[in-house]
Structures are given as C-alpha cells and as structure tokens.
Length: 561
Image (cartoon, rainbow, N blue to C red):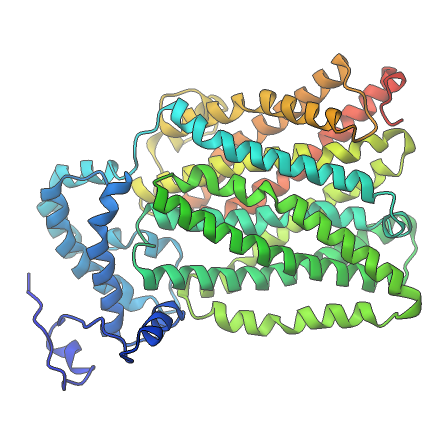
C-alpha cells in the first residue's frame, strides 16, 4: 500500500492524479475563521476537485475512531486500524464517480462494498472471517426492553400530536371554509400524509446515513442535510399542487359541479401548507437526527416518530388557518389566492438548483417522484372516504379519531421500515436479501423469530392497544369529539387499529425486502407507500367501524351525535 506524502504547495491540483494520491490539505481557501466555517457548510463538496473529495474521505476515516464510542462501531482496535487505510483507498475510488449519471443512493451508504474484481478478492484475503464478524457487529445488540423504552417516549409524543390534530380537525370542520368547500377534507389525509412521504423518508435516510457513518464528516453531513432539505421543498410544493388537483377531480366526479374560485383556493391552500409545514418539520427533523447521534440513541427508533409528533398538528393548523383566510378574501380580493399559489410555485427552481448540488438528492430529484405521487393518490382516496363519511351527520364522530388511527399506524410501520432498511444496508449488498426473506411470503416470517427485525415487529404490535387506550381516554378527558367511550365502541376501534398495524407490518416486511432486491433504496421508496396505505386502511377501517356501530344500534351511545 502506498503511503501518502505531503504535496508541495506549488503543485498543480491536476498533477496529483497522475503521480499517485498525495495527502490532502484541509486548509480553507481563506484563513479567516468565518470563511472556514462557511466553506464547510456550503453544499459544494461534490463540485470540488478530486483532491478535495479525498479530503472528505480522509476526514471521515479519522473521525471513525471517535464514532466507536457511540455504540454503532463495536470493532476491535487492531481490526479497525487495519480497515482505516483500506477504506480510505477504496473510498477514493467510489467517491470519484459520485457525480456521474449512474449514481445510486444505495451506493454511498455502502462505499466499503463497492469493490469489483481483484480489489474484492484482496480485501477478502486481508480481512477474512474477522472482518465479516466485525461488520456484523457494527449494529449494537438491542434487547426488547431497551428497544421499547427508546420507542415509547417518541411514540407517545407522536400519539399526543395526532390527538391534538384530531381535536383541531373536530373544531375546524365547523368553519365556513370547511362547510362550503368540502373538498378540503380530501386534502387532509394527503397533506397529513406528507410527513410519511417526505418527513419520515428524510428521517429514515438520515438515520441510515448516521448508522453507517456517512455523517461523521462535517462536510458530508451538511451536504446531505442541505441537499435533502432542498429536495424535500421541491417535492412538497409539487405534491401539494397535485393533491389539490386530485381533490378537485375527486370532488367533481360524484357531484358534477366545478367552481374555478374554489379550485384556485384549494391549490393555494395546499401548496402554501405543504411548503411551510415541510420546511418547519424538516428543520426540526435535522435537529433530532443530529441530537440523537450525539447522545448515542439509535435514530431509527426516535426519528420517524418525532417526525410525526407535531407534524399532523402543524400541518392541519396551517391548512385551516390559510384556507379560512383565503376564503374570507374570496369575494373582496379574489386574486389573492392566485398570487399565493404563484409565489410558492416560483420558488421551486431555486430549490431544484440547491438540491442538485448533492448527488444523492440530485438522483432522487429525477427518480424519487414515483412513490411520493403514488402515495399522494392513495391518501387522496382515503380523503374521499373521509369526505363522504363526514357528510353523513350520523357519523360525524369519525373526524376526531381519523388522524389518531392513521398517524399511529404510520408511525409504527415507519419505525419498522427504517430498522429493516438499516439492517439491509449493513448486512446485505444491494440486490441481495437474507435467506429468510427469500421465497414466498408468509405472516409468521414477520413476527416469529429471534432476529432484531422480529423483535421490533413484536414490540411495535404490542404497543398498539395500550397506546390507543391512552389516546382514547385523552380525547375523552378533553371532552372532544361526539362519541362516548363504551366497551363495544372501544372493542371495535381497537380491533380496527390492531388489524391496520398487523397488515402494515406484514406489508412492510415484504415491500422493503422486495425493493432492496430490485436495487431501490427502501429509505426513499418504502415509507411513502406504507404511510399512504396506513391512511387508506385506517380511514376505511374506521369508517366501517362507525357504520357497524350504527347498524348494531350503538347510536344511542352518542356515536355520531
């Protein structure tokens, strides 16, 4: 292995490429501290010269020894010392092609494994079985109790956030905007689903990046954060507009009525809500990810629930406020809605330019639309079910419980999806799945076993009943909604919630492994589908439950009073 020697100050940057890799200076162009700080924060690392890319790799390798303390790199010192040099040399090859058109988001997460031919054979000879064992030990062993304790607090926070959102929705359903433009109810699941389409996807991607060491380097960390936040704003704006179009179409088909002023108001409310809520939640999520890394908590357990803890409440409050405000201006200032929509749409090119600075976000800028748009359509169908159910005065009590059952199901399945994805990033090359995931799927594969993913599925399923009981009694104590908590109502509601989560966990197991087998990154593709299915299943099962309770005569207990 060639040892690096300092390169002379006068040497041209290109000369280092032909004469072997030389040590790279990390000194910024400017000697001032402020200039140095900005140099590490601006997301231009992937547009720098090849030698500066090597600086990021060298910095990541040096900080890797520090990361041993947080529990995610449990390797012995002699193996780690030997792997530092190997990783630096091989990463110089993998990062050199980050800017090409063939970049895949799963590749930088597994830079160590992007070997081919003689390099892979030599690496196997050097590391042998000890290297394989140390790679398996990268992920810490978690007991079911420790896992449950880590999940419990953010799970409860997320649950109370959905309860608050349900209470807000129960209040605003009587506002003028919601009364006269009922298509807003179709927007509710689609916009609340953005936390699954965007926020939880961001949380899952960054959690995986933390666990595999891709955020050890400050330069790489800020590239990932800024690139992904900009990408999320582009997706939020576009999805918000498409959700409004879907709401207009789904509202027009059964009624046959179309009003242009209402359509423009829906577009403005949806785009503005999606943009503002996505920006606020994205900033909060980045803080949670970075904070969990510093405190040694597995971000897979806390990031996705916290992403949803106040996401529903923030999104619903912004939607109600903007919709009501634009509705009041509809007669006096009809052009305001058009200006609001045009303003946020005009910001889209700016976010596209920023997101294109990082190869991972640039790749998703072109290929990441399928799950987001499909999930929006699925959530909109759930919104249509909600709109038709709320229109029945006998079933008005469903409103307060819809965000709760949808949010809890989405939170739990997002945790499981993120954990399975991290496990695959560690233990399997893209396109390969564990032996247990091969063959036909059967439900016992998800819950029966002693593996980490089996234990997490068992823990998450056990949280459903006690969690929903806490949230039901919270709604009851706050005297919100129109439904009395009778034993038969609670039994039917809990049965619907259990069935929803059971189906979602089974679907998540099969979907994540299938996407990994096909070469897609589950962090970017699975969670939007799963949370959208959670919205659809939750709304449909809840509507069936209320219809069933009404048919068996539970209307005397104030169901839909």
